[in-house]
Length: 239
Image (tube, rainbow, N blue to C red):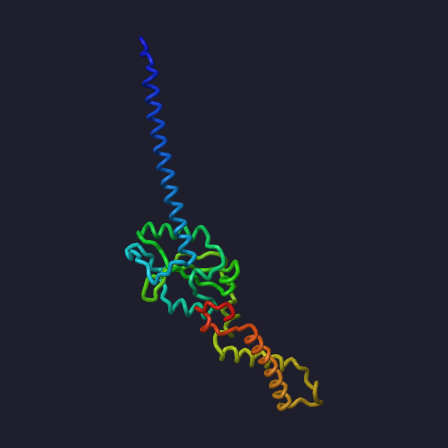
């Protein structure tokens, strides 16, 4: 059997074709990466809160209804747990890659550009980086918001109880009265007189109440604190 001779020119041309094919593949890959980088850059700009929006045109055939929340529900949760619901531009932490990836996926599936991001988080997260759990929302319209991503750790299990006194002035007054009563009961009997009387008890209680109330009022005014319903959507740090 006689072997066919190799035409070096044809082999050279074949190599050039293969190289050109590889170049086209590389160019396509570079173009995909360039577009992906530009997409992420645009998302990063939107996450800085530079582009405001009151709604996003979600495709309701694809949307996860379990992640839709009304402003009233968000407000109630913020008040109960002393959280804030503010534009993303006030957030001083770093949005994780997982959140960016979810935004990219939603934009691709729905064919939209998400804007107007808001964040539900403790007050300190809007000034300092922290480990508590922010919730990232995008507006749908008519007071509804779509939950995109949650990150960080869960809130302390006793947080709702710990911030309950700051819900309103009635709660705070009740706590002050309770602490005053406990402090009065801790005073040893006969400390101020040989026989304990009801009048003496109420005098001590009144003294304790005034002292504790004065400390609470001074703390509130000195640090510019306010009740939960007044701060849930306030952008001011000392609220």
